[in-house]
Image 1 (spheres, rainbow, N blue to C red):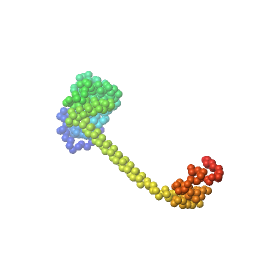
Image 2 (image 1 turned 45 degrees about the vertical axis):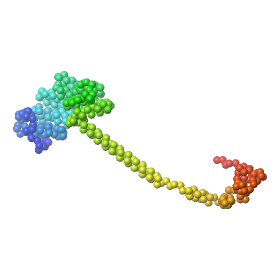
Image 3 (image 1 turned 90 degrees about the vertical axis):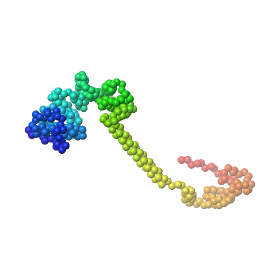
Image 4 (image 1 turned 135 degrees about the horizontal axis):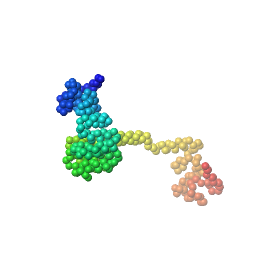
Length: 345
């Protein structure tokens, strides 16, 4: 059966870069095939961090040519884990463990179970590994997986206890001191748990302590803070721009409104009055004491009566007898005119 050629090998690949133990394992292969397998393994290792999917393709190409070599299965399992293919990663790493007797990937296998939404299986694998007294590095990995599985199950308090115990019991940001990378990773997981639990202020203190103790930013916390600060700055800039646009729009609206408002001129009222008088038929004017009156409104009162009334008000003539001065334009004495009822609606 003809093998698939696999992805093209980069020019920088050199089979001599392969670990000596792996090169020794390839000696049982045909020399030409061993060289091709070695090149694909080197390519897989070089692309693992930046292009994990392509790294997985190279590892699979090596497996197609040397599936019975444990190191090849290990390479496929690790590449699949980085590429997010957790089912394949679990299969290949189990195969590697059976073929080599190396159980150092127990934490990775447990994490694969978490990724496959089987947290109970993950906890079972963690407990089995803890019973064998694992080394410090593997212990950190196992505790991280255990805390994550507890969170997956909604057991946040239990997850916090796992991490607090791993950090020495009742840890505080001030007691972080000068930790190694394992302790920094545990502290980062604990800070993230606090943040998820709503304890943002305490989580911020932990993140600040981690960043101060990790000048090389191996945990990525400093980069995370930088990204958040940049996002906040962008958000503030957008908000300021929106406020500026809104203010400018308000100013334009006010200006438009001002343009539409015309102040009342005194002439307008007089003109409207003149127009109203002009529209009333039969209305004339009479000058009395230098003042013009519309004599159409006088009824039966003559202009002489009005002249006399004005003169009386000015004190120029004695007041007549038995006259009611409460009204300027009243009926002459002796003329009984019935009052008109006011119109009703």
